[in-house]
Amino acid sequence: MKGSVLGLKVTKLSFVLITLVCTSFLLWGWDKAPSLGSIFPQSQYLKVSSDIFTGSLDKNSSSNSKQVDANNLSDSANNETSDKHEEGYNEKSNEEDGKLLEDKVLISFVPAVSLNESSYRVDKKNCDYSKGKWIADDNRPFYSGGRCLQWLSEMWACRLMDRTDFSYEKFRWQPKDCEIEEFGGKKFLRRMRNKTLAFIGDSLGRQQFQSLMCMASGGRERLDVIDVGREYGLVRARGAKRPDGWAYRFTRTNTTILFYWSACLCDLQPLSSNRNSEIAMHLDRPPAFLRHFLDRFNVVVLNTGHHWNRGKFDGNHWVMHVGGVPNPNKNVVEAKNFTIHQIVNWMDSKLPTHPKLRAFYRSLSPRHFFNGDWNTGGTCDNINPLSKGKEAVKEGSGDQMAAMAVKGTNVKLLDITSLSELRDEAHISRYTVKPRESTGQDCLHWCLPGIPDAWNEILFAQLSALGRF
Image 1 (spheres, one colour):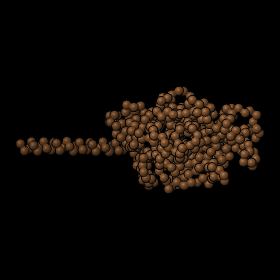
Image 2: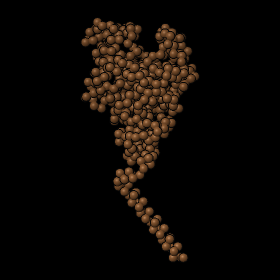
Image 3: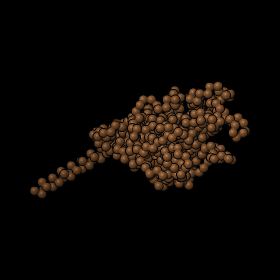
Image 4: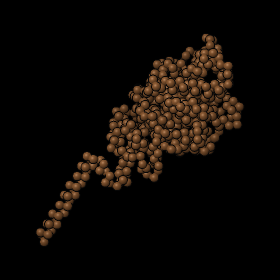
C-alpha cells in the first residue's frame, strides 16, 4: 500500500517536473523568437497588447476607442501621455516617462486591426480633419480661462465677463475617418524642443496664438517662460497701443511661440513719414517680418481674411500696389485672392531650401452676425451648443479660396471653417469685463478657452502626421 502511494507521488512529481520543464522551454522560446506567439489564440495576444497600448494614451481620456497607428509606433516612442491637468512640470520625470513608454511600445507592436468593436482608423497622413463632428467631453477645456492670465487677453477671457453659461467649453472635435491625437502641453513642448512656431496673420491668428500659449502651459503661470519679443523687433513703438506681435520662450525645452500682426499677409510700407499718410499694400510681396526671420522658424501658420473690405482699407489708409506701382484694379475680393496665392506660392518656393520647415495656411474663421452686421445691430445671442448641427461632412473646404491657393503646393491647409461654422454660441457676443458704451456685439472673435483650441489640436495632429518636426 505504501509502495503504491509512493509510486503515485513519484508519478505526480514527475508530471509536475515535466510541466515546469515544458513551460520553461516555451517561455525561453518566446523570448528568443517572438514569432512563436502565433501558437497562442489571436484574441488573447491582442488583449494583452491592448493593455500596454492604453498605458501610452491619455489617462484622463473618457474615450474607449482611441486609434493606434501601427506604422508610426517607432516614431511615437517618445510620445508622452497627455498632461493637460497636471499641476507641476518636472523635466527629469518627463524624460523618464518617455523612456518607459518607449520600452512599452517597442514590445507591444500590434497590426492595424480593431482592438474592440469600435473601428480603429489609423491613416493619419490622409486624414481630412475638417470633416467630423463635435462631441461632448468633460475633459475639456485644456486650461482655465480665469487663470491663464499671463498670455490671455482680458477682452477674450469670457470667464472674467458677465457671461454665466460656459457649456461651449465642453466639446472636442472628432474627425470622421481618423482619430485625432490627444494634445498634451508637455508633449507638444518636447516635440518642439529647440524649435520656433510662428503665427502670422490678423486678430484671429492672435487668438490662436494665445490659445496655444495657454494650452502649452496648462493655463498656469510659468516662471520658466520668458519674453523674447526684442529678438524679433516686437516692441511697442512710441505712441502705439501695442507692439506688432509677441514672442515667448519656454526655456526648459527652448521652444518659442510667437505672433506677428499682418492682417493682409502682404508687405506694408508708408508712402511718407506723415503718420496719417497712405500705406502701400504690396500684394505681391510677403511681409518683411516673414522674409527676414524665415530662417529661424520651424512651423509657420498664416491667415488672413476679415480685413479685406473697403472699410478697413479706408480706415488703415491702405492703397493696393503690384509690381511696385499702384494697382489699377480696385476689386478687394480679387486682390485678396491674388494675395493669398502669392503668399502661398512664395512660401512653397522656400520649402526646398528649408527642409525642416512646416508651413500651413489656416482657412477663414467664420463670422456669426445675425439680423445685421457688426455696425448695424447684428447679434449672436445663442448660447445653446450645436443648435446648427454637430456634423461637418460636406465635400470640399468651407473656404474654397484657401483650398485653391494651397492646391498643388507643399503648404498644408489648416481647414477650420466648416467645423467652426457650427459653433455660433462660442463668440464673445454681448459679454464684457467692464461696461461699455457700444451696444454692438462681437460675433467675430471667440471666447477663450474655446474654438481656437480645436484649431490647435488639429494643427498638432497635422504636424504629428508629417513626422518628426
